[in-house]
Length: 187
Image: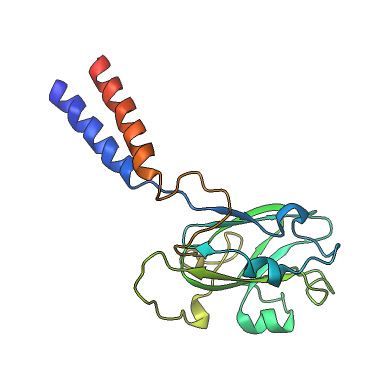
């Protein structure tokens, strides 16, 4: 019985050691996703480091805005009619699951042309060079795209909120293991 509890505790410890949550980037920071206020989303994105596993949080009024994930060509022409993914809740989280560019725009007529669009460059978490993704593998959303197409940022330092970073994952693992072992030995 004690051996089983120790084995379970060890397996739980191994699971916790690998846990690392990505950063959450609120698009537009405190302004959010809007066409008002002269926010430059391209400049906003250029000041951030996006990595695979990070998430973009789009917060907006769904009566006036939406989020369309599009191809590079559709991004350039502000065309949201053939979106890879579309989001309309007003509080949408998109997990970046691969390195490369992700293109988002507001599909409401005139908003993209007014600057409500963002190009996010996601970096790989490995230090080895990564080939550029083909246009057919651009990110996607849960609304209307295959799951393998969903986003992907890579490793880099970010000022975004990170619940568990590589720097402190060992500490969190030790806390978790201590709690598991304490629980296992309690019985």
